[in-house]
Image 1: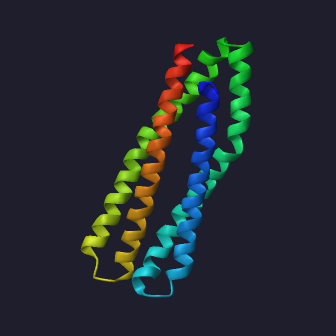
Image 2 (image 1 turned 135 degrees about the vertical axis):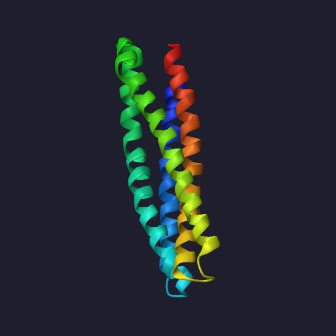
Length: 159
């Protein structure tokens, strides 16, 4: 398996991981929201972030095979397009990861502050917990995707 195949297969599995985390978050929210004010508060951020995770993870899972075929064609037949299309596309992706990392960190920090400052077992404390957990999960999954993307970009630049 070459580097492009390794990257896009891993991306596909990464997309599936996003979907799995989203489904788990929705299940937790659905199962617990009636239990207390805390869980009612947690349900909102859990589900809202899960909707983003479903969209991102599903689209990555869906498009990865087509992306692999496109890149394999470019590498085999039109290498000049790497510098015109694929390398600039991946540089944009890397910049988006850097921006998203700060957003995810800020959301996790806001969630943690709500957990600390909100009244015990309140809706706001639950909202903070849900926000912190989901932001941290996205941060971890994005970090893994960013590392894969950096390796793939290095490979592209070496061709």
